[in-house]
Image 1 (cartoon, rainbow, N blue to C red):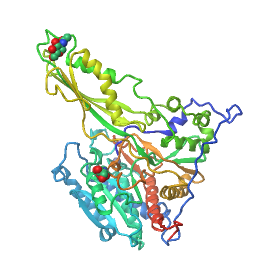
Image 2: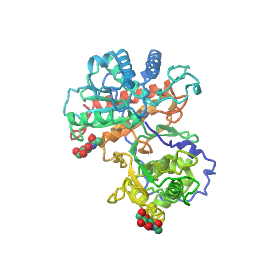
Image 3: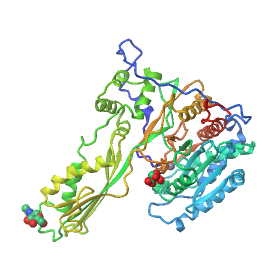
Image 4: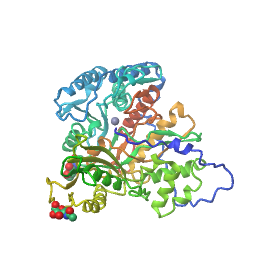
Length: 557
Ligand SMILES: *[C@@H]1O[C@H](CO)[C@@H](O)[C@H](O)[C@H]1NC(C)=O
Ligand SMILES: *[C@@H]1O[C@H](CO)[C@@H](O)[C@H](O)[C@H]1NC(C)=O
Ligand SMILES: [Zn+2]
């Protein structure tokens, strides 16, 4: 995935700024509207297959997973953003990677239908015997982000070195851990004679880290062609906020699949001004004008955080009020009853820090600026790219019209013409002109996936499995697992899959989600948490296979 910021709940809650004690000073909380219903635990155990715990109990399986993940990391499937032809030489290592998968997972490759979509995207289908059950779909990606300087790494980035606890290397955690975990779970089931009643699909893109147009951009339409709109019961992709163990909380852990994603937008500003010798300059060169514009756009109060009733984070906070009242701000329960969503968000932002605040507000970052060629020549063409992550309560249009409103008086002051998405385009291509345009199609915030335990059967089943799996994990023995939907500040391949299902969840089922150095040096993956993730995939496939949601009583098959 492309995470921009990481929400580290434990750190936020561990801040020494809460000198709370269990004393009687705590204000009474009006918690009448606050609730956090938990789905009943679902441990599929009547189908005759081995318990998912066998993954962490069987030393042979551990050794096998070390081998599988290590070998997957050893194939360098990094690609830059510039490659747009799937048959380009740059994608040649994907053939090796796919050969390796055939080697590692003989039963999957014997049993499943494998289609190569747009050359390197992989679509595995295990057809179910009961066609009226909607398929369950798992996503991952084969590509990894490139290495900056390999000498910065403790172990060479494509060594797949195993130190007894971790597999080290690029892709170990993002996302080969997921891809290998999924195929391993189904290979294990097939080895036990599993014949799905519900169709199981794996859809693996090969350019997720470069926006996914070549992989997911072709996989999702292919699936829509085959199965139709809203045809998939559940989609699970990487992402989310893992399984968080609060440092002070001995009793509860939070499983936080993402049920929403912020939107995304890149704005390009292009300014053309007259050149000339820099010994006779105007008061402001083009660079000065661009600086003025960016400075204005970056005014601090531009985007305010908001935590309204529908925001998934609100539900997670309610869960904390219900299940961890001693480990959160004493005012939180009361504060959540307000209708002043801005003040509430501001207060939480102050208390929990910027990593939390950015989930509630639109962010902007000027990431590229170009202009000028020589120390004695005035710059003629100046350009900038500003990256926006759009909060759930806003749209890319809000961002664009805001930028236009702020920039208009500035360009008037410099006597420039200005074209933008809402203008007639007059003056484009002339001197003394500013153009503002989106770099590519803006992405609106993702539709929220259901998280209502009483109303949505799919979420209830999914979160019931998550509870059962993680309450059975030895490392979390005795803790209560609370499953709650959260949001991501980055985007995953799921952006292409919205038409296929309402129930899209992005979740690496991992206790170490933010400790794995994804996208940076020394990426790694612990085998323990890899095996726990496999437990989740394995039990999820079983739990959905033994169940018919179309039946009036949604009975176990
Ligand atoms: C502003 O620009 C227009 C068109 O380029 C020009 O005709 C006009 O004289 C300029 N005004 C000033 C005050 O420089
Ligand atoms: C979803 O369906 C709409 C309407 O048919 C279509 O325009 C759009 O391209 C589809 N989205 C994706 C990501 O395929
Ligand atoms: Zn990823």
